[in-house]
Length: 483
Ligand SMILES: [Zn+2]
Image 1 (tube, rainbow, N blue to C red):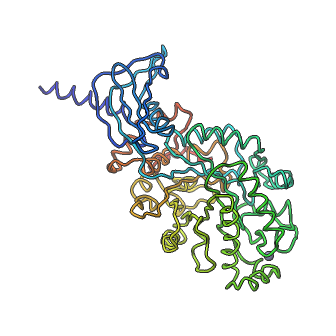
Image 2 (cartoon, protein in one colour):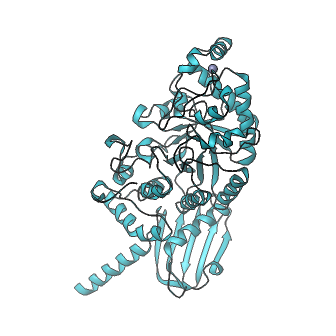
Image 3 (cartoon, rainbow, N blue to C red):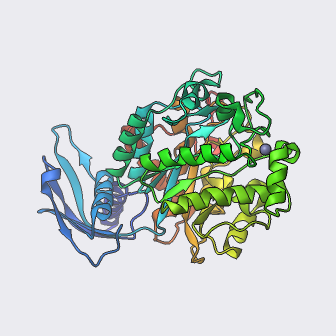
């Protein structure tokens, strides 16, 4: 009897390991046996069930084959992503998949991954690698940060100097380059095939130094400016000059042509008002529109841009900085992206709700995955966190009681020289906890249970080409380097 129970225990632990899927499906019912095939794709039967929500799916694996039910492309796609994690391929090319039945659907409708291609440029193949990753983790938006003080990365035909000059203002070897409109179309198409919408971010009025080096007349004083190696300056787009507003609208025309996304991100964070406070044109604009001050001017400026997008049937996402102060009203196609937990706790979240604006939650604690687990370069101890922090204390998680919650995001910023080959070790394994929070409707497990699942999955993700860094401080060995 004793031996029987040990055998059962061993078998069940084998099955549990074999069936680990991250993010965890809503329900998994274990079957008996396994399905074997040498032609996996041919053995999948897809049936449309129009009654299922758009991203939901049912997946049934029996000894005779695989059946997927969904109402459309997204559901079928997510079922196949789950299937990838369940199957093991043998040396002779045979796939073995345990028999089971899964019913699954996402917890929230907006699940995004941000990659900062502004501070550091990444190759097109790298962009695709992280779109693949987002798809494996069942995220449905790729938020592409394309403009920064350190680089303007999107080709705009009407203003060639943005990329001729603005894409090469950084000094680092991986800060040179931009994406042609042809490459961008290819990336948008590649993402769409994976049920991912690309949301471009054109940051305004701040983080604009690269554009101002290319076209100094877009700033308040038209002078030559310096690009900071880190951080940001008060050299921002002038809100009081008609030709600057026209320039930005012309840029948005090309952006909207390239990106079919319902959402266009207009940044709006970290815009110091030093220049605006002394610029005669900005001063005149404040007077003319009866605005309180230069902060109100940013709201007026943001409203002009959001209204422009509204005229094209699009929505404007702004970072939470635009709701810290009362003032000029933002139009109803505005979405607030709450980020600055370290500086303002949940002010942006609450203020967005007060204004009846939808919110995306993506706080710097604990969804900014460029923050390492232990200090590195400009990331001091106060800017570090581990996977347990994410799993147990993420302020962006659990806000679904609010009807205005749009969803959750996570980000990989490239401050302080986070280059391409450093990205994986910052994302993994912590991004698995975030994917779990975005998708999984099952009750959270203890951290220890969840982390065991993550460790069981390490080899699988590494096989897909994603290297793990340390998840906990105790795992950072003396010889480990974040470089
Ligand atoms: Zn100005």
